[in-house]
Amino acid sequence: MISHVMAKAHAGDLWITIQTHPNIVDIAVLLDLAGIIITEDKQIDPATIEKAQSEQVPILTTAKTTFTTAGELFRQGLPGVDEG
Image (cartoon, rainbow, N blue to C red):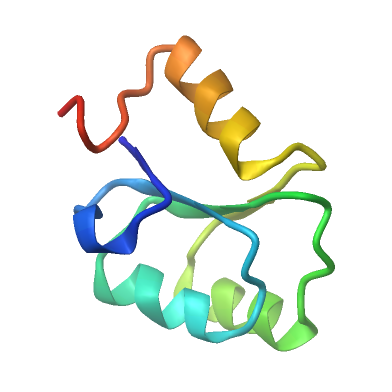
């Protein structure tokens, strides 16, 4: 599933966000997320990349907005948190 609302996130979900600070990795680990997608071509803090590598949390990036990214993933068959 895809989530941009952390209160509804479940283990195995993808998190779509514009946040890039190292704490996003801590949250992904805590919630056992499948990975993080950072939108809007945000520059990722090097400490975030290092932490993600050490915790084995995949981080993907896109120039697209969070809204567009979620819509494209949904169109590809990945349900949102309200759908699962």
